[in-house]
Structures are given as C-alpha cells and as structure tokens.
Length: 159
Image (cartoon, rainbow, N blue to C red):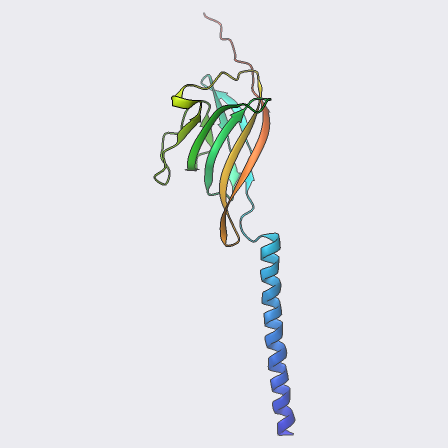
C-alpha cells in the first residue's frame, strides 16, 4: 500500500510538472507569434497655425520618432529629417524640432545644406513617419505612411 501511494505521488508530480511546462510553452508561443510587446498606433494630420503647416503626429506605444519625410505624388522627397527619438507630437514643415533627444540633435537630410523645402500649399503629399517601439525581447522600428491633401495658402486681405 505504501509503495502504491509513493508511485501515485511520483506520477502526480510528473503530471503537474508536465502541465506547468506545457503552460509555459504555450505562453512563450503566444508571445512569439502574436507579439506581447507594444502595439504601436500612429497617425498624421495637418493644420495651419500662424501661417505655417504643422503636422500633428499623435501616437501611442512608441518610444519616439526616428524620421519624418514628405514626398510628392511621384515619390520625390521634398523634406526629410532625422529625429532621434522625438517625443513631441507637432512638427512644423521646414523647421527642425528645437530640442536634441538622447544626445542626437535633429538633422535635415533633404534638402541638403539646410535649404528650405519647397512650398507644398494645395498639393497632395505623402508623409512617412518612422518610429521605434519595443517588440518581444527586441527593439523594433515601424513605418507609417499617409496621403494628405495640404490646404491652399490663405490670402489675407490688407485693411
């Protein structure tokens, strides 16, 4: 009788251990295939503020913007800036954000030599925002692209 009780405990221990291992294996598989990291959400809209175009880039579950680019319909790059984990939500067309992030100062890549970008009033453009986020066990990057119709430049009447 004692021998059968010991065997029962041994079998119960093996089954319980196997269940725990199986549960752990299932959790790891779900995390690997479905992602248990962040689920980034990014959008871009534009408004006119004080006569300037301002891109609003609301986002969640990202660690910051790495690059922001404006292209025309033919995919010509009109303006491109490297941001280095930019945390702010507003980017004024043609202006670099004022603050360096993580010892990386924002840098204009296109046009060269910090020349002003071309006017885009009334044009249809594509905006591309590259961002960094965390995925299961690894830093990752994503890219968001959106086509936006820029409003016409308003003509203020002189009093």
